[in-house]
Length: 447
Image 1: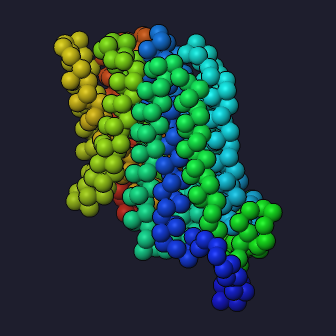
Image 2 (image 1 turned 120 degrees about the vertical axis):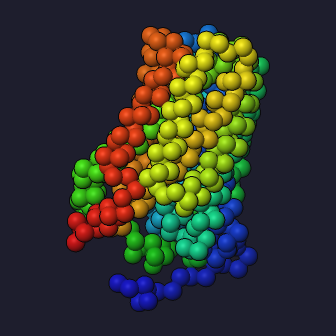
Image 3 (image 1 turned 30 degrees about the horizontal axis):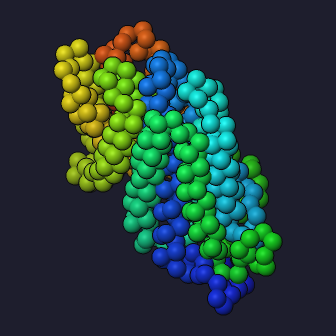
């Protein structure tokens, strides 16, 4: 039924905080803070703990396995999206109940992390806790993305997308640096408590705002589902799966997915190999590496995200992909050729920084193309699949990176990244990356 025939929403009660649809400031603050907390598990799992494990003698295989398992939940975003599209507590809005569940679970897991206080030898327990933390982060991510699409007006989306990306990188940097410092001094329980307090603070703030006027603030408070929530909620699985299948099982799309997974080779190296390389081979302290990776990740991640749109506008999607991937290949090949002659850490710092910048740039370029070829009828679920596949590639390549290092050395691992990146270009081109004729193709298949 058209929204013009819907009952008007109840006004926000006098004295209550404005709803997110009523206040731009509240929308921006809530979404930015939620994205910041998404970075907490990532900073812990990809920066602080790998460096700490390396400083305590963990092998490249152990660190690689830890990273691969810890970030695996990011490969499951599609399932979170399907679950939230199908089920929700409507009186609290389409996404807000899921967000609160994710935040509560994240804080609880961090408290459990503090109570358990695993040592560097208890890698399995660390993996389990970080896996759970990233499950919470994925739930937060999917729900916040959905809420953003639902509530943020079109004219605000470009601005909020930039803030969202930057906030997540800032969360990664803060968590990585803070956790790295206290892990180095053996205060792992304090790490869990500090990060839990951070998540709780954000959760309390976000809990003050309804999605729309008239909805209940908490499950036990007075309120009702908004007409918009009732109209948009999915009632069946089959139409969703049918639409995804039509958009997914197309040769160009399958080649693109394979290419996007392989394009994560550089990220897999910086996640899983760089900690042992820096700490065990170059003599860094664990907190020294954590501080460097956190700061450079934030600055260069944001720089790469800002560069990608300019590059696409200047030379187009296809040439942006080719040029940036060739830059990644050049970085890895140069590192592999020069590794045995490194005299200090300067070369590593330069290569690591360049890899982060170009890896983020190619990631954003790929996201732009994924958005363009999504069938609008199932855009949310199909886009979640487009994001899940590269995350799985990153997790899988992180997992086996340690075996590559032990078999071929660190210089061999750099060459491995260069080779995988070269193959990704081939599959991107086979998938007709940047071919505007594909933009409307998925839509025609669903008519």
